[in-house]
Image (cartoon, helix red, strand yellow):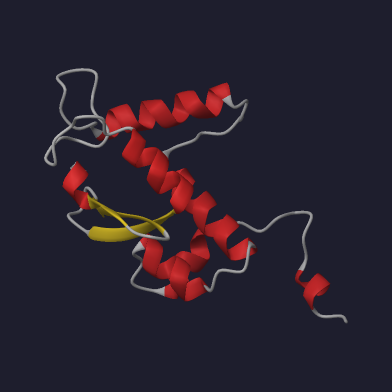
Length: 137
């Protein structure tokens, strides 16, 4: 994944990031205004071609191993007893977005899935929830 500051576009209502993943797929992700502003605040004097997330080793872009290590350390600090990974965060994002009323096709597009069936497999049923809650008036 190679994302430079030129891939981050400010918007009036939010931030926009163009991300390139390890399979050479391009995603455009909208950020809430607060996250977009926070991200812009990290730039400092970095040039447009500088990495958004700078590696401590060598000063280039973070590699996949470094990102995995950061996510796992953050999960431990948060007291989560899970095998966290960037992919786990994608699943969590989809689950929470849909729980809050996002249409499944929007989650599908954000995640870059070719099929809604793939997005559906990412979702996690809650043991404390039931579809019966949505059938009675």
